[in-house]
Amino acid sequence: MTCGGCASKVQSTLSQLPYVTSATVDKATDTATLAMEKRILLTTISKALKDLDPKYSISPIGNIKTEQQTKSWFNTYKPILLVFSFLILVTFIIQYQSGSFDYIEWMRHFMAGFFLVFSFFKLMDLSGFADSYSGYDIIARKWHGWGYLYGFIELGLGVAYLLNCCPLITNLVAFSVMTISIIGVLQSVLNKKEIQCACLGAVFDLPMSTVTIIEDALMIVMSGYMIFNLM
Image (cartoon, rainbow, N blue to C red):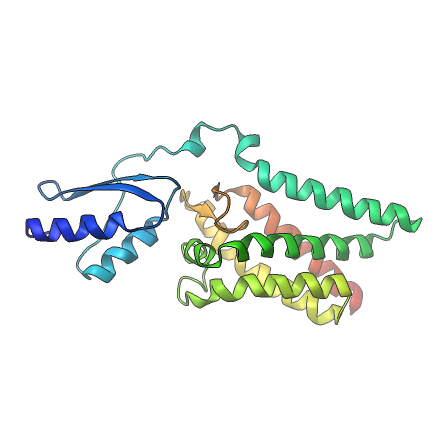
């Protein structure tokens, strides 16, 4: 920043970001201090500054402490653990009611529930999901629209699995989409980036971790196994 006017423009831009409650910019040290109701991706802040002036960039100072760091592992991942617990319970009840356990049918019902529930949370705040997803997904980083499309792809997969419609095509799409998704997740986890996981959209503030890898890998293994059985 070259003058007080620049600092004022930067401060005004940062203050207007979603979930920011206050922003203070110091021209002397070229720093900005943000107070947030919810964690915002650094890429979102950078984009806002780049839109203001291409010469601006921003990076964190030191080790940023977040509320997630003070939570226990269970409390941090409670939303996703509850989702998986409900899905397992409901799909096992369906199999129990049928009188016999068909593991292929169980996987189909589980994947139907998985994609329907996860698409629901993404579609609740599609714009927020797209912003979060662009922070790590290999396609969304280059094409922001992929984040908007992804929520509807998951919805379509959920309906297709529920109706058992075109099983081979459905599983091939699921296998391809989840394989692409896990690449960005692996890169983020291996590089130890502290970013928000977009698996449950922007509704819950979940950090990227091995839990996200397991979640994606489970869908890849299930869809891959079903493809093998259909061939």
